[in-house]
Amino acid sequence: MSSRTPNVAVLGGGSWGTTVASICARNTRTVLWSRNAAAADEINTQHTNSRYLGDLPLTDTLRSTADIAEAVSDADVLVMGVPSQSFRSVLQEVAEHVRPWIPVVSLVKGLEQSSRMRMTDIVQAVMPGHPAGVLAGPNIAREVVQGFAAAATIAMPDHGTAQMLQPLFGTSRFRVYTTTDVVGVEVAGALKNVFAIATGIGDGLNAGDNTRAMVITRSLRELAKLGTAMGGQTETFAGLAGMGDLIATCTSPHSRNRRVGIGLAQGKTVEEVCTEMGQVAEGVKTSGVVVKLSAELGVDMPIANEMDAVLNNGQPVEEAYRGLLRQRPGHEVHGDAW
Ligand SMILES: NC(=O)C1=CN([C@@H]2O[C@H](COP(=O)(O)OP(=O)(O)OC[C@H]3O[C@@H](n4cnc5c(N)ncnc54)[C@H](OP(=O)(O)O)[C@@H]3O)[C@@H](O)[C@H]2O)C=CC1
Ligand SMILES: O=C(CO)COP(=O)(O)O
Image (tube, rainbow, N blue to C red; front, side, top):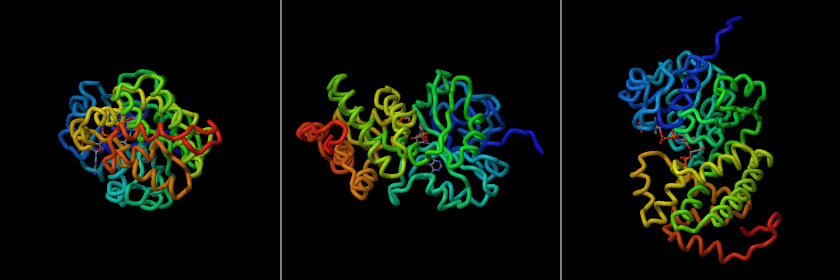
């Protein structure tokens, strides 16, 4: 039996795909696919990805290519790091080149707009038979590349597979825990982005620390209610992928989703903020999916509803906060209202 470590292929050369690939390259042979040939070349020769991570140095053994078939041809693990709305098309493009039954790990924190599907459901639809899971947690990319201590959880349907993957993604400063709650981790990662936009609006309106804490805490409750209704485990929402990531994204100056909220509060349009950033803010598209799912499942989500109204129906941000404040607070734990 071969004792070599598994080969990893990461698809998506943005901030997070590059960061995770750089970590994996410390542990095993890793190839990063970027659709941008110049970016792939820069990673191979300069060991940087300046468009997304400035001059932060990447692991020098990380290899990058713009040829997707080459990237995955001898992969034992496939890692998906393209944004949620491109996830299906990239997977379809690569499916015929991937070895049978290798595990697929999603890094993605979003839901598909057209189908309302989670990324691991898309894996099952496009590549049935491959074990599909997710890596998520409070992980602002540039802080992870810089080597500041952080933690994430890897969720796979089978705990043995999660344990097999754990050492590929972890380092002494990037602590990777394991779980089998794929749904909980995936839903938590997608939903926190919507609430980070809400928090950013509050910050952009200079509402203060108490307001931010109120919005984060009540957001966690909405996130956990929808997450459990979708099949996630309650404990997951109090963990790294739930509360942990909600705190990081709702408070970090680096969060793209929080920056969308701040920009809206400053009078910019969603399009203006997104163009300025030049990076994905998954919460913008996830907001509409969340309200449809919550209506289908009968879960009351006042904050998410207000965000959908702001992002997709042109509601002024001040009116969103006024709308929430008009609601009478009920029982903190058992009540329906926010
Ligand atoms: N950044 C972070 O701190 C974290 C992000 N995430 C999640 O990771 C996922 C990826 O985000 P992130 O890396 O941050 O995004 P970025 O905006 O930084 O980069 C997106 C990358 O995806 C590529 N891409 C976009 N569409 C396609 C497509 N159709 N085909 C091929 N490549 C495509 C872009 O290529 P190009 O450059 O050519 O446009 C770019 O390389 C998101 O779901 C995000 O929520 C999770 C944890 C942390
Ligand atoms: O998911 C993230 C941190 O865990 C990154 O958040 P943003 O996409 O808002 O930057």
